[in-house]
Length: 158
Image 1: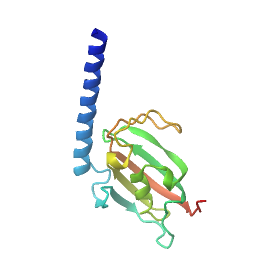
Image 2: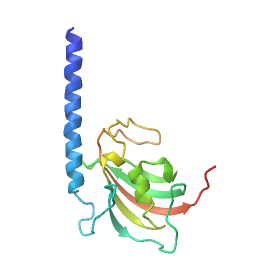
Image 3: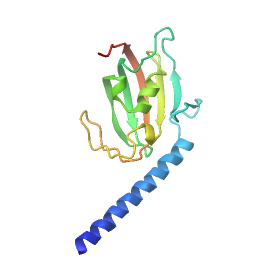
Image 4: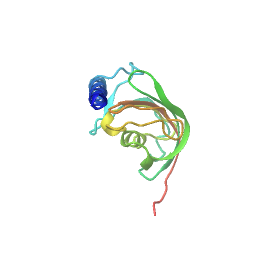
């Protein structure tokens, strides 16, 4: 009986901590601490916020949902902790929706900063240390990515 009561109390504390974290992340997205304060912030209809550090080849087509892209990137939580980064080749359709939306805005050789609300990231789910070296991401986490798009190839989906 005592163990069951302790479990309920601990679960309640963890849920309260996640609710506090959720509120902190929502407040951050309303007025983000910008990585580049001198640059304007743009907001899409979905709530993705982004900054353009440099615009690449405007004659190149932008990635689509089925594109294979190569990016140099770094991912951060709102507390500044880095959870992932490096060079990766990935399909736009296989990343969180906020990251995919941001990629579709970019031309090759562009540098953007994405501020992704938790609803467009991993949502209310814990993201345990995943394959590929991604560190733990708590539920309700807004994500910040600094991204350089180095290549984009259209792919056909069968």
